[in-house]
Structure formats: structure tokens, C-alpha cells
Image (cartoon, rainbow, N blue to C red):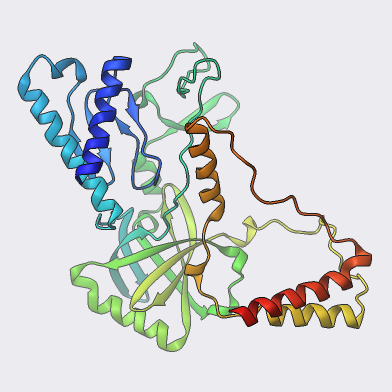
Length: 350
């Protein structure tokens, strides 16, 4: 923790002395784990940690404020270290119940996705000042504070109906609090295009037995549950599946959300010679292996971070990789044979 504390402390004091204001810090490693550390005088956010922070203008007025400032900074640094070790616990994004038949199973929902991508900030080209996005009234051009903004639906040109949070719940109280399972189907019947985003479901203390019963029942029958629920004012189609004692909810798209490929120029009637097809199948077979998801890495982000590091140190970044050249039809057989031989060599070397 010492290194992190030292780095953060040095950065804060440098910002104070050289720019006169702490402004805001962005930790670029994980957007969902490190929200912007906003220091507008009042609060600091780092993963799960939220503590009071004092305005830099007050730090030199009262010595106790300086002590409190450093203590909370140490706690924030500790939270960062915990996140690096994977020790920060997850937070539920929705609570409600799974319902099927007459059974209701209270659960908490957690996101199953975490993205490790660089966090970019839009800057003013002239002086590299961060761009501030404001919610501006179209009538008078003035910025409107968040507490004065409401949601409205334009039912006629220029006429709006204002909706409060309670109105969205009144539309269907059950759907806002219930994952309503209506059918059980075979997993292989689900079109992969319909799958959108996975979530973990955790039972409450009182619902563990019913949760385990549903999970084991799905595992033994090879079925998945299909249903729906409402989250953030939108109804979602969902799939419920078991995985090693855990129930996973897959948020799905409705069939009406899938675009038709009718306008695409697909080579449906393209003539393929038996020799070409035979070589293609052999190449596929040669490259076939067991699926191990952990072996696939986001190498583009790694290369992009190298570019960022080079520019940060005043070096000219060098391009990586080569632009692909489409394979010409006359070269197709030769390229297939060459690819097949290359695949054989790689497999033999492995």
C-alpha cells in the first residue's frame, strides 16, 4: 500500500501547488472499479470506498483538516490496493425475486462483466483542458442542475407528460421486482444473436434452499428458464441457466430487436470446387482445439497502452501489425495449402 499512497499523495500535492486546485483525478485502469476521484472539495470515490475529503483551501487553515485529509487518502489508497488484489466485494445492481409457478426466490443481481479498457477524456485542443458536458435548456440556453431535471414523454408536438420514478413502477409493480420465468426450454434452441449481457444471481439467506433446488433442477434436466423483468425503466427478456451451483441471468434481446440481413450481399449460390472445400475443411480440423477462454487476451488494449506510454515519455509511437490484403480468387487454393502447412507446423511445435 505504501507505493500507492506515496504516488497518490505526491500527485495531489503537485496538483495543488502547481495548478492551485485539485480538480479531479482519473484512475485509468478499470472504469467500473475506479470512478473518477472527484475532489471538488467534498468526496472521494475509489471502488467501494467513499470517504469525506476536505477542500484544499481549508487544508492550511486548520491542522486537523490536514490530518483528516491524509487519513482518508490512506483509506482510499488502501481501497485501491484491495481492488488490485481482487478483494473488493461486489455490489448488487438490482434486488427482487425469481418467480416460477407459485415459487418466489428472493435474489440479488450483480454484473458478471468487468472491462479493462483505457478511460479517455475529451480535451480542448488549444490548451488540453477537459471538456465539460452540461445539460442546457433549449429555450434560454442556461445550464440546468440535476435536481431540476425531470423525464417527460412528448405525446403531441410540444406537449409533454412528466413521469416520476413512481410512475415507472406503477406501470407494473410485479415486473419491476420480479424475474418472471414463464417457460423452460432446451439450451440449444436459443439463437446466440439474442444473448446480450450476463449477470450473477445470489440468494438471500432465507432463499438458499429454493435457489439451490431450482439450480440443480435446471442442471439435471439440461433446461434453461425464459422470462422477463424490468430494470431501469426497460423490460428485458432473460434466460436463466445454472453454472456450478450459481444461477446466471443472461439479458436477451427481443426477436423484434434483431435486424434482418435481407439487404446484405451474401454469396448463397457461389460455386465451390470439391478440392477447395476439402482443403478448407482440413484447415478447420487442423485448427480445431478445446475452448479455453482464459487464453484469449485483449492484446489491442495492451498495444494501445504502449502507444500512450510512448507519447507520455515524448517518444514517437511505432505502428504495430500490418494491414490485411484480401486473398485473390486465383490464389485461394495456394493460400489454403500454405495455411494448412503452417497450421500443421504450429501443432507439431506445440
